[in-house]
Image (tube, rainbow, N blue to C red):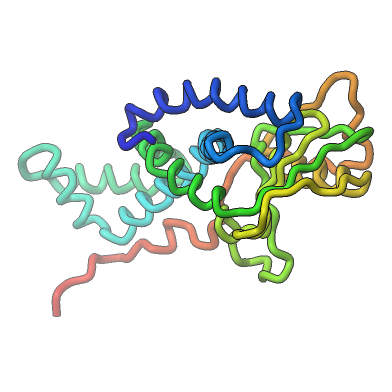
Length: 262
C-alpha cells in the first residue's frame, strides 16, 4: 500500500494489471467466490475506482475553497493584515489592507484550490481505509443473461439505506450496498458486512434498478456497448457540476470588526 503521495501512482499502475487478471477470472472463467489473494486485489481496485474519479477531487476542492474563504471572513481585516505582513516581512499600510480586503471578499470572483499533492495524499491514505471497509462486506455477484448494463464516469455506486433519513450523508461504511459493473452483464454488489460471498438471482427488474442507480451516480456521462440498448426506461439526471450544497455563504461570517479581548 502507498504511504506517501508519490507512491500512489506507482501503486495504482500495477494494480490495474492485477485487477484485469482478476476481472477475467470472474467474467470469463466464472471463478466465484474469489480466492483470498484475488479478493484482496479486487478490493483494492474498487477502492481506487471510488477515490480516483474527478468528482472526489472536485469535492475536496470545494471543501478547501469554502473553508479558506470562511476562515478569511472570520479572521477579518486584522487577520488579513497579519497574513500580509507575514508574507511581506514588514508592516502593511491601511490602504493595501483595504484593497486586498475588497478583492478577497469578492468571494464569487475567484476559487481557491489546494495543491495537487493534497489529492494524491488523500488517495494514498484513503485507498487502504476504503479497501478495509469493502473487504468486510459480503459480496454478491449477478450475471444477467439477456439484460445489458451501463457504467458511468463515477462507476462505484453507493446504495443508500432506505431506513436512514435523507439528510444524512452516505459513504462506503454507511451505505446499504456498494455496486460496480464489471462487464456488460456482470455486477458486483458489496452488501452487508460479515455476509458470505455468493451469487445472486438475476432478474430484468434488478438489471433495470442497477442501471438507474448507475445513471444517478454519473456526473456527466454514462457509457454502454454500442450494440446494447440498456438506457430504455432509465431516467438520465442533469449534469452535476458541484459536489456540495452549502447553506451559508462566506459573506455570512464577515464581522464589522474583529473580536477583541475583554
